[in-house]
Image (cartoon, rainbow, N blue to C red; front, top):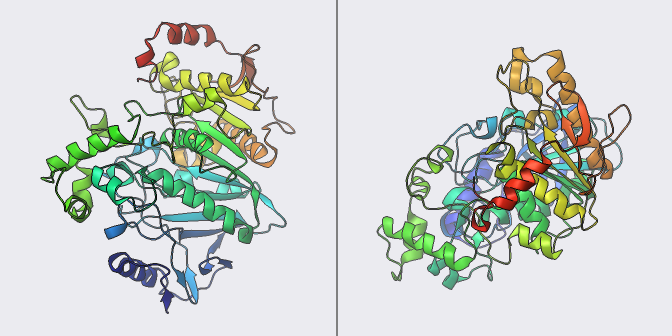
Length: 486
């Protein structure tokens, strides 16, 4: 097969060609759709068609390391897309209850689509953004499968975005190069924007409605949703948002501007014997093996004792801004929002996950945005310890409970999964999670302070937040500089 490269860059072009040849070597036999870069074939299984490993941007390697995502190349013929593309380069760690299912690679900008095999008309679209502290995670974990929600009548999309210093990095040499006209620091967020732009251009080919896209993310994925809600570059790419354990939007220790992010980059480069004033600094940094760029950093080492160089997103002012400030100023997408956390989330009931969800629910509701606040308190029958831990709600929202717990899954676990995923599907359809045969989920209003608790019994319970007074008191007494700390 021959492939048409749409851009310059010999190193990146060669990597793109090699990747495409491998992925397209088999003869297509599954369902075929046409997207803007060519024909792709998928696979059908139990009433769901899936396409996996679709390139939504060029491989960010060589001269494209620390660049905004560039267009994927087109191909002739039909490309087989039945296996996940590589998750993004990382030091593996089973983050957010979902160990990745591929060998990580710097060539990782791929996405996946699931749809009902028998679908007609425009279906709502759900786009999943994984967590993992911006240093771990990927779209390949089995518990992130889109098949269960597709069986409920939505088109489901997941994608990879760059992590760690490969995804979030600044250096004076990059600023001077200015290859992307001021788009700096947040390359992982730029990947998210590129994936959503791909959805807008192509999802109609999969019976999805580009005007009815819901983004949903957990932990770092939830923080990504905050970023997208407030990014000046994300407007018009989605119509609803669901934030699972996304705190108030920012990672602790995040740089407040490009200059602070640059200083962290200079410190890292110095550790790699690349001086800040070196005329060839950028060439030398891009020549580092990706393992050197990761430098032993993952979720395990991130929270180990001792000093650490931050490697996550920061406010650059163009791609990402401070979400809390943007919410307060009314500079955000005014769309329906679902927001919450687990009952035993990071930091406990007054920690930054639970308190952050409460803070955001109140801030958005006061500006007239439809908000549906939740707390997830259910613990799977087989877990054997009280308190719903961080990320334990994910398989219930995505309908993958049986995948997560396997033979230990109980009928009650499955029932809770059906209920919670039904709320999400309803929200994706209409912007309101309520529907037939579901307990009422009240719209959040600060004065009334009602949330929906997915209770320890497994039953949804609408009630005044029983922790509200305690959380608010803790927030009031906390020093301003510590409000986002774990």
